[in-house]
Image (cartoon, rainbow, N blue to C red; front, side, top):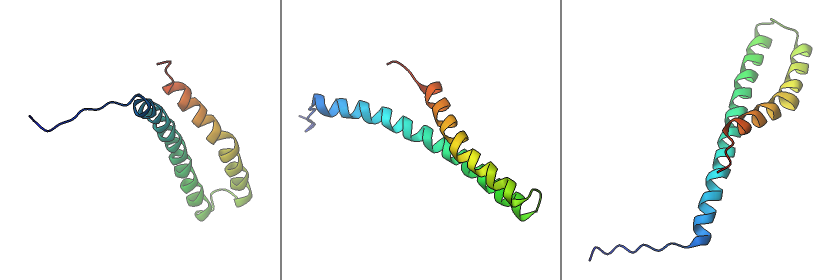
Length: 84
């Protein structure tokens, strides 16, 4: 007798499977956000060096958050999508 008991509850197993898919989506989203954070740091560096005017970078920042972030998240989710 090893003292191990194996019990399987179907609702718990279903939650684990759903949680796995949810975690994948969270990780994909975090990857997209990390990419935009890197772009943001680059933007701050450009402002500090006065390479581009600050008003142009403001417009680029809006485009990055309102257009690029949703597009990156959607594209990453579609690339990782599986029917199983």
